Image 1 (tube, helix red, strand yellow):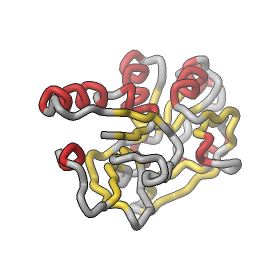
Image 2 (tube, helix red, strand yellow):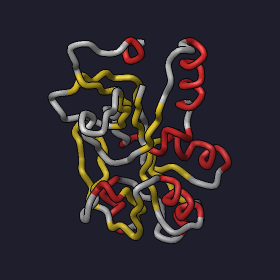
Image 3 (cartoon, rainbow, N blue to C red):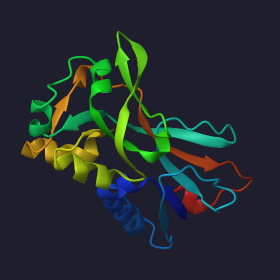
Length: 190
């Protein structure tokens, strides 16, 4: 069974869940491909894709798995300089650390009065993976907007401080997607 998932999921319970799956189905072999980019599942021979955020390909069967809360965070030392933002639009004055996939004009999405608000941010650094963004944020050099599960240990220790939690979008999910084939494998069905 060939799976793809974002790099960040490797730092969550995913490896443990895959291990449990392997114990339950000893005849199934897994091949996990960590990619943050959207891939063509048919061309790359992928059976199942795990993705955070909407999947727009109408040729895929998509299932919601789990809600993914996002958090805006920086070190307390960083916040002491420009001050804590009171509204998402205040982030325009901050140094953002962003995913490269957001493009040359990155925006972070929030929920304000039940409506989606896209806030353009000034990216001081972008990366294709969250790990270097978190590392630079921990050095007090900017603000990240990432899935909470990727920064939770740093929030718990106080190394990072979350802000704007009341504006976090509530409609971001972890999805599983697969291509509908005439005969999907027993491994995929499991």
